[in-house]
Amino acid sequence: MGQKRNRAGNNSQNRNERNISNSREVSRRTKGKNRYSFEEDRRTTARYYDDDGYYQTEPKRRKKSASAKNRDDYTKKSKNRSSEYGSKGRKRKRRGRRKNVVSKTIGIILAIIQFVLSVVLTVNVLFFDMLTVTYIMVLAGVLLILLGITLLSQIGAKEKGIGGKIFCILLCIILAMGSFYIGKINNAFQKITGSNTMTSSMVVAVRQDDSAQKLVDTSDYTYGVQYATNADQTKSTVKQIEKEIGNEITVREYAGMIEAAQALLSGEVDALVYNSGQTGIIKDQIPDFENEVRVIYKHSIVVQIENTAADASVTEPFAVYLSGMDTYNDITSGDRSDVNIIAVVNPKSHQILLVTTPRDYYVPIPGISNGQEDKLTHAGIYGIEASMDTLEELYEMDIPFFGRVNFTSMINIVDALGGLDVESDEEFDTGEESGKVVHINEGMNHLNGRETLAFCRERHALADGDNARGRHQQAVITAIIKKMMSPSMLRGASDIIASVSDGVDTNFSMNQIQSLIKTQLRTNAEWNIYSVSAEGVGDKQYCYSSGDALLYVCIPDETSVSNIIDLVNRVEAGDVLEESTVVGQ
Image (tube, rainbow, N blue to C red; front, side, top):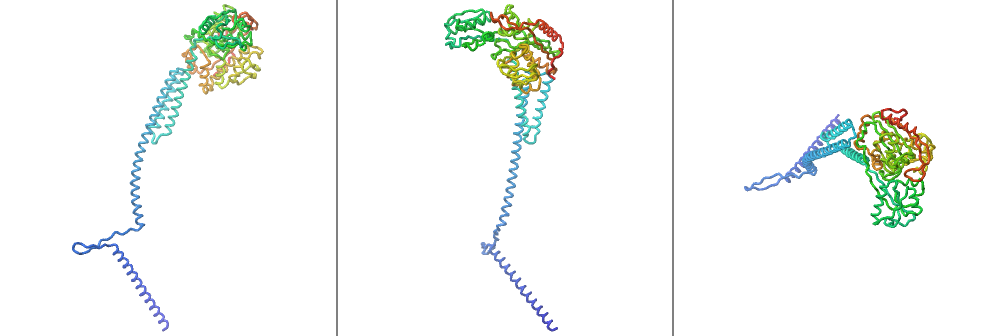
């Protein structure tokens, strides 16, 4: 027991010693802290003496730690940033307001441009005068709606309205192009309508081996002429030659053109004066004539044609002479007419009668041949009026209007239409003389411009000759009417107008064309097309234009002519002919 108590005492004594030791250590540490604190306080205070000799202490500013400095710097920077950003934000808002004002101003300017272009387009449409009032009202309404959309997209836009500006710019481009094309079409119609001139192309030719290169080289030559046809033009050309050479020329007159041409080739005369439209007549008798001579001079004579169709009505039945000129020359030149078709039109019954007359039809030319028969195609040499007068006398009718096309315009028109689907009543191959070798199938054929021209011109490969060619020409005209009344006409309108303006000539006035178009737009009528061809018998006879040479001709079949006269009367009376082809469906 005693040992236990001693152990307990020893333990208690040890604990007390440890507690005392710990207390001393704590006291020593506390004193150390206080000493360090005192020394720090001494370092942070400064003593100074006043006037009375007493000194006071002023606390020094403590040097801040790096972390404190960083905190202060961060705070200052934050304040600076906030003030700076606040200023920039206000600037950005002001700048944004200015940008919105500029954007809206630009939008309003674009809207004004769109308005002006809309007015210009409307005025052009009104001036063009080919749309009905309904179409014009619809156009004006659409333009106003589009202008309203543009204004709303700009005035009511909270942002820049970029989409509205793009929409407006596209519309302005479309409106400008619309005005341009309307002006282009209007100019083209002005160019082809109201024709009142015919051009006679007179030439001077020498033999191919002749040394003369210019007109002045022929001052001492003997000229061959014939005054039986085109006397006035020939005499006028002789005077012009003498004026340019500076002296009178020696002239030898012949009864006919063929005789005068043979005199040149034989050396009887040194030069020949003739109308270039008579080249075809000469080639019928002298096939190599063009290869054996050389043209050294050309003289064009423009003759005024009295336009009697200006007052004709297009709301009542009327007739149009369609002439296909056998040339690539100027459309107004006097040349043989290879295609002779009369279109009798009744705008009330919507019936069209196409009458084809063979080019070799043996008929007199009123006012020209003094009652002597000639080929119908030769009438074209004396002008479009001579051909119209000849057909009027043949079919006992009035033909106030005409339309002329040449080879070039036919090719361009068909190509601008994207080709034609033409129906043939037989299978054949065209020859080189037609302009292109083409295989034609019986039934439907898709042809381009040159192929269509060859199809219209070919006759030697056809069993029915010129009559079959006439039917093919009617098929081409029907195909053109169908194509021009289809949507493809709209896709190629500009190209079609461009090609027509240089290769088509008509005495329709602009007002008459406008009236026909507005009537069609208002009624949207389907048209009935009936085709008929004059028939005859082949023979060889003397012709007025060829002199003493025998030429192939087609003697008219009186029954066929009488049938055509009856059909013309029926169409003018308002009948719709059976078995007509309907177009515009």
